[in-house]
Image (cartoon, rainbow, N blue to C red; front, side, top):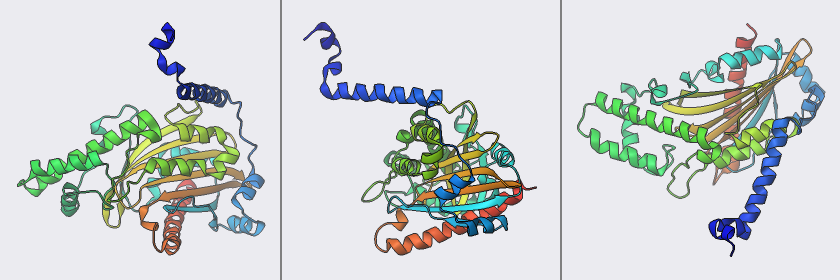
Length: 357
């Protein structure tokens, strides 16, 4: 063995040589993306209409102010997917401006509080996420948490909360609430830090009794299976899948945390959003890479194109939840899709009102 091979034996391992080849190919691929060599196909209403499966009668419905649904394939037993389109009496730039200043959470009636996270976050970025006295039972359940479906937590996060239970034993409820709120803020901060450092690979699985849930895999599937991204925005799709590689200079990146009431329970959500805009179109990519309970992860795509005297907005939403898998899954999916569709329609109505002001 040569001196070089003795010092760097991994370079002479067949498996690692193949790995290095793949890394080189990936590097070339990424250079092409950054240089714009992988340009998207021309996007216009006809192409979108064909991709979404909208016929002429549905376009007429859109012109009349109706919200029209279109099918979105569900890739796993856990995934719920819905697509909606709506006409806005406003140019795409107004939608872009709205999302540059706000979040879809602003038009969601179930959102209690949302907060934009600074570019250099620390633990204080989450200080406003707090449990309140009326939520003492939720706090007690957190302290006694174990692997299961009541909460979305990793093994280490569960151990940390169980350890906290001993520390707060015998304290008044208000002190317990304060301690658990502070501890949970730490969980959110750590989740955000790991995601920003490693992207999907940094998302810890949720501990379950039988098989852990993997939101990273779910979000990867959601991103790779998007027809809209694959057909019209392949460069954005690559960035979205391979985050934390830097977005283009003409894109805006935002992180938010949300406190949303789900099933009458406080729910912490961490959200990542990319906004792309040009003179003729806007695209918003958003993923919820941590959700406190009920569902595992979520991805939404909102696109906007000029259409007649306004804009056509298309909105696809994919949510992954353990609750629709298993026995009776077809029935569960049907109910879940309808519930999600109704919530999306409320959000779209509110979004249209906000943008058209």
